[in-house]
Length: 243
Image (cartoon, rainbow, N blue to C red; front, side, top):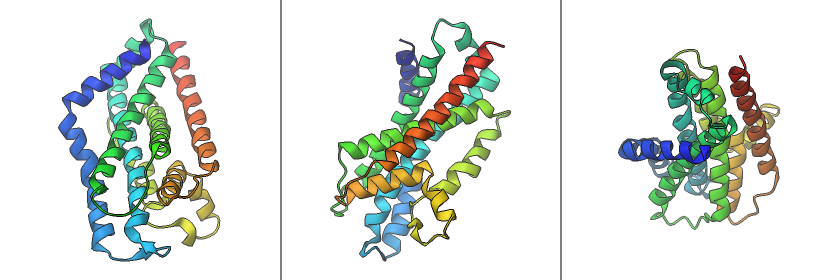
C-alpha cells in the first residue's frame, strides 16, 4: 500500500507538470540527434552513425529522466518541507517508501526513453527495439533513481542537486558509449568507464537494436549498482529513524 501511495504521488506530479516534463525530456536528446546524427554525416563500425547514436541517446534519456525525477524533489522535500520526517512517523514501511520512489523515478526515465523512440520512429534505421530493450531501459532507470535517492539524502542545501548532475550525470552522458565508442579510450580508463551503468545499458540496447544478443554481464553490473545503492538508501533512512 505504501508503494502505491508513493506512485500515486508521482502520478499526480506527472499529470500536473506533463507538458514541462515532456518538453524537458525531448529538447536535449532531440538536439543531440539533429546535431550529431543528421548534421554530422559519418559512419561508425561500418554503419551510419545514426544507428550507433539512437540507442545511446535512448539509454541516456532514461538516465536523465529517472535521475532528475528524484534528486531535486527529494532533496527539497527532505531539507525544506521535512516530508521525510513525516514519512518516518507515519505507518508507511520505509522500505516501501524507498521502493516507491525508485519505481516512480524509473517509470519517468522509461517515459523519457519512449519519447525518443517515438521521435526516431519515422527515421528508417532498421534498428530493433523490443520488450527486452524496454526492460533494460527500466532497469537503467531504477539504477539512476536509486543513485539519485542516495545523493538526495546526502544533499546539504538546495544547491547540491545541480552539482551532482554536473559532477556525475553530465560526464557519464558523454563518456559512457553514447556518442562515441569507448574502444578508442586509453587502457585502464576504458575499462573503468565500461563498468559504469550507462555504458552497459548503451551496449545492451545497441546490441539488441542491431539484432545481436545482449549478453548477461550488463545485467550483473546494473544489478550490482542497484543492490549497492539500494542498501545505502535503506541504511540511511533506517539509521535516521533510529536517531
